[in-house]
Structure formats: C-alpha cells, structure tokens
Length: 460
Image (cartoon, rainbow, N blue to C red; front, side, top):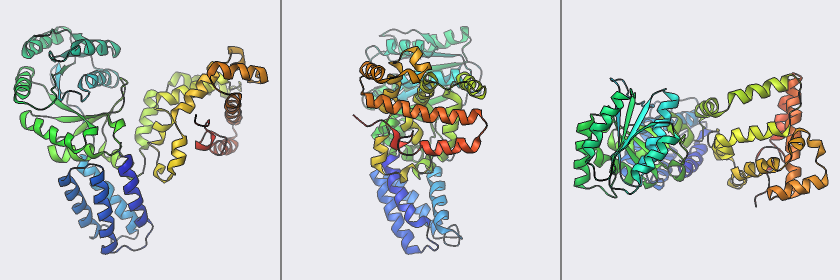
C-alpha cells in the first residue's frame, strides 16, 4: 500500500529537503505536485483540498519559512498532516464491558468480511489472550456458514452453528446465550453482505445491531475500491453507529486512497488493515507509521514488533548458544533463518518497512523477490542430512544431483554455498567476540554476490 503515492511525494519533498531557504513560490509549486499525487492515489477530493490547504498554511507560516532547516521542517509538517487526516493514533478495540463483548462486522459482499472475522478472532486470542466465539448471520451466500466454520477451526476459535433460512436476529440471540454458557470473552458476529447497499440489507443489519447491542461495530471495506471505500463507509455510518473501519486487501492496493479518505469522510477511525489471505495477516493501523512509510521514512517500529511476534525465539536462542559455544553454523541453520524471514513476509515485506527504500532504483527492487529465497530453501532441502551438516561434501556430482532435485542449475547451488560461506564466516566472528570483524562481514554481504539485492539468485 502507498507505493505509488510514496514515490511521487518522496520525489517532490526531496527537491525541497536540502534547500537552505524556501519561498512561498516553490512551496506553492510543491503543493501542486502534492495535490496531483494525492488525486492519482484516488484520495477523495474533499480530503485532498483540506490536506493541501492545511500543509500550505503551515508551510508559509512560522513552522517552515522561519526554520533553520526549512526543507526538513516541511517534511515534518507533511508527515504531521498526513497522520492527522488518518486519525493521529491507533484506535484500539474497546472490550471494556461484561463478557461477552460483542463485535458486529458489517460490509458489502466481496470485501473479505468472513476472512477478516477469523483474522480478528486469531488476533484477539493470541495478542489479547481472549476466548473468542464466532457466528455467521449470512444465511444468503452459499457456503458462508461452512466457510466461517472452517476458518474458526484454523484459528482455534469457538464456532456457533447457524442454518440457512434462519432469521438473523434468532441466530444472534442464540449465539449470545451460547457465548455466556461457554464463558467466551468475545463474540464476533459475521453479518450478511450484499453486492450493493440496499434498504433490505440496512433494515436487517439494524435489527441485528439492536439484538446484539455490540460494543464495537466495525465496517469491513476493500481498500482497492479507493475513495469509493470512504463513500460506502459513509453510507453505512449513516445507518449504523460504526465505531471503526477495517481495510482489507491492502497488499493489492498500491495507491492508498482509501486509507487517506475513510477517516476524514466518515469520522470513524481505521482500526485494522488486512494484507493477504493468511490468518495472521491483520495488523492494527497506526496513522503515524503509515505517514512515515508514505514519506519513505520506513516503519521500523512495526518491523521490530513483527520480529518479536513472528520469529521463533526458541530457535534463535538455540542458534545463539550454538554459535557462542564455537559450534559450526551449517546449512540447516541457514535454512531456518530463511524460513523465519519468509514467515515475516520475505525480503519484499522487510524492504517495505525500511527507511529510504524509495531512493533505490526500481530495477534493483525488481530483482529482490521472495522466489529467490524459496529457491534457496528448495536447494538446501534437496541435500541429504549429512550434506547439510557438512557442506564440504558437496562435490561436482553431488551439486548436479541437488540441482536436479530442486529444479535449478549447478550454478545456483554454487551461489547458495557462497552465501552460506559468507554467513558461516560472520557467525565464526561472532563466536570469537570480534564485533569489528562481524560488521565488516555484514557490510561485505550486502554487496554483489552477498545477501543484498545484488547477491540474489538471477530471476528465471
């Protein structure tokens, strides 16, 4: 998300960043570029006008022109205003009520509502330590109930059954009773969706809302619909007391118009964003971090949180103990590291959160993709257990066998072994306590032939 907007805004801001003095004229020129960038990102026109006007007012005032570093001050102003338009700070779910806390999910058909119910259940169970029950009131869409039942089993949530043809209010009342008897902390209700907003849909969901009396009513919307997402959310907000919005399919949206429009138009905060089909692909939305990513400042805080949550700490500890004892780092260890990286979204997922990635030429970015890591994992997987523990055994004939088994070429096997040798040297420096040597090795690995963009296996 935000890729195209980030590229346009970063180049505009970069022109002004290093200037010792800014004038009203070149600020006006920059604001014209900012306006075009926002419109191209499918941000709603009222949001564009308000945002550009606020930035312009602050830029030609004391905040920027009187600053010792006006270019840097302008970047700060743009970041602050982008953050403000998206909601200033993360808005957490309010679960402060007698159990079960009811969360009602609303939205159009095709927005990913049922999948998001399961993702939210997993989020609450794992990060908030809540016992979660889910129920489907979608008695119109074929297999909707079965889909939620399957997803509930995957995320280890309780599932309350419902039947086609049942009244939605009847299902809700029965689910509430079951949640109380099961001592569930949270009950998530998946309401029926429609292909478009209609009166019957609004009447039914209003009746469901009255019966459930939810503490949170969340609108699930497809980010790829751009400013239409904000307009649809506004229509729902007029019929329901929405408490927040969940943006889905953000991994397929390079523009980011929905994220910049929804809060301003509806007055409701974006609470979560979904990126991908996996059950853990739901993240709390932090406006300040999103603004930093738009301006190519990266999102290091989210990266750190992701590492803490997704990296297998037990494996990390075992590897650290192994290395500190002077034991040899082998190809099994290398494969574990790559699998952990894939679990965090791969190289592309990591790069998305690093500062300054907008300055890297696109042709270099295109060379970095997760298929390279997949191929390296396949190559190591094609080796015998003994070869992984003792890479020196890999002579010419063995490399040919490994290449054939992994669907690659012997040259690809050689590249993996070269990268392994560099990592093994780095680990040996670490075991010897040679921090300077370790840093030199890491720097060397980022160059051609190493683990950086120049060192990946060539694309096929």
